[in-house]
Length: 211
Image (cartoon, rainbow, N blue to C red; front, top):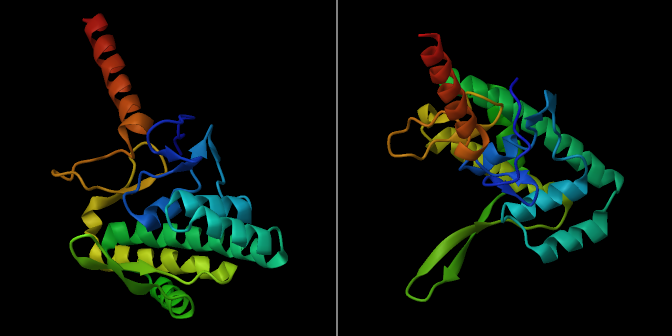
């Protein structure tokens, strides 16, 4: 597996990668590879909460409340372990879905169970010109953090064109290609795109020197 460069530029937010253009894919990308080794960005519950805040899913106040209430409790550690397991199950399911368009039955069952136990809700928001609706979820216990993850994964499988969902050609990161042509092949220009361009340039120079 290729490395993700140690680059804190575009795509990194509060120490996490956000290059997927879709929440479930950004969730997948919380275990990139650096120097040939997996880099676990969810080592503990505190890191999980930081990611949820960086993703715009919870506020700083909510994060503080959950950290204060649950902290390093056995329940918080269990949620972190289950979340990492869910991530890896989704990784395999998404890789399979990218290839043949079929969502494994066990993935469907697990997502349906999570959405039933921790549903996403809808509320009305008053705008300056017109009202609109927005999704939200009740955050009363650590397990409720599964709500947006399960919902986003379900929406990925149900509504996103799988031909535009792919793993970067140079690293382990996944992304949803929102470009007009749909020909994006790397996670981001800053992370892998420049590396590909530099390699191509060096190869051209070598061929030229051999003439």
